[in-house]
Length: 311
Image (cartoon, rainbow, N blue to C red; front, top):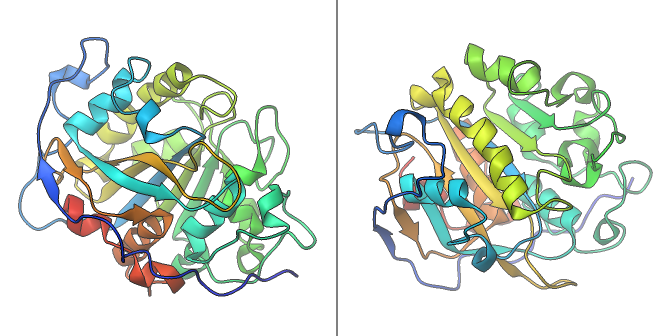
């Protein structure tokens, strides 16, 4: 099978390193529950041990931050934390998803063709899913036709990286599951029961991740889920941090693009904005540190989201 090359270079050698907290008010069109902020409700030493990554698609940070089409996303940034200098590593989608879960560059063929999982489009490289073990991860994918499937109306495997790693193939049917709805299904059940694993990915379908749908559709989809996830026992206890991040911005080829990234935790000071240089390797670093496993490849050199946002 086609294992990939060694890690890209360090992602910590550019850019400013200031982090500020500048609370702002949210739009009246947003859906904050009961008027309370999502973040900043806890003090002291963070007890976070779980990370959920919600992937959005194909928009530059400049089209998200401050957008009238994204009032809820901007409320999450205002209530919680946002990265102002976060770079998606390359184009198109799949290499970014793979980098964010392995610490390696996948900016080569066949990965840069957004290939479906199978044949040479599988890899033996280590990854966060394997690191945390079969009880430590879940991939929740909207509109996937069945567990560990590469089919489904408005579903794309290229946005669901767990399906590409050979070492977790036996775990895939149990752990890579259809997302369900806000009232029933895998994600709803795990959130309500407080049984989210150490690491989870959430993949909206192509209409709700802004790939085929609009920014407003993606914003509305997040607004249907975020209140439920943040009301769940994992988040309310301080155990869970949520990362909302875009896979890539505008452009093409092996060129980085600046995208939005929102961090949500009960420990984050509302309105925190970090100008630190982050990449998808920084998300992997946070997931590995929270799970207590070694930092893979470029994640070891990435700037820390946990330090910047205090979760």
